[in-house]
Length: 315
Image (cartoon, rainbow, N blue to C red; front, top):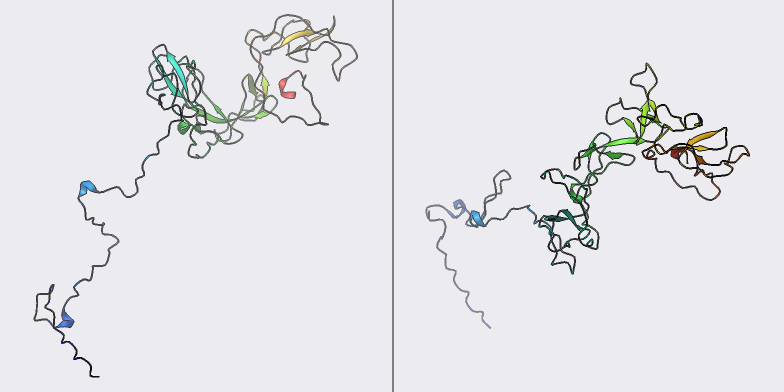
């Protein structure tokens, strides 16, 4: 059978290139786009007021604990609801007229507020659950600022391991400084730069050898003001009937000997002779608390122990 005749091709009229004097090879391509220029800002096809920021993220909103939706958010005041929306928070009282939701509350004047102190009385129960997980932050090094008691976790700064956040006295709400603080009998040196300095714990003083400024010293206890004439532990106290160090009392062993101790158990004391202690108090207890001791691991079964040593540092 014979095939049908092919249809004739009809030439199209130019639509974008109106210059008919050019040959086909000279004509510009109709739909070719310009190459992107990395330095040239992108052009958008919608009005300026409808543009959206490219990288901006919406802030995360903390959800109320189920059943606590009617309670207060931080900053709103909570004296009318006596409860808080968010996990880990409590309604703390400032005075009879104001209270707010916080994770913790330090009694006294708060930095950045008026001169009226907080009572920090709990008004209602703590909202169950943990406070929101805060973004992990680098720990502060020795000599750097810290604040591990800020009301909201997001504003807390913790010290690196082995350091303590030391706060200035009589300035509630102020930030502290990370310090290496040691207990009785340990080496200390406060003359070094802040990043290397070693300080003594409360109630102790860094005793430096004479005529050796800048040298390392030893943390030793200092006499309570007004008790400088009294006895130190181990010296005997039957003649003075008082003790230099805070929290200690002169206890009698017998008519000839007594010593300064924090506590005394009547009877024989381990490591001494076979004469028992009467533990009668000879004089009054020296005011003040004993120094904060460094936390020590507990002894296991079969290991050495001593929970009645004269000084807490040796227990």
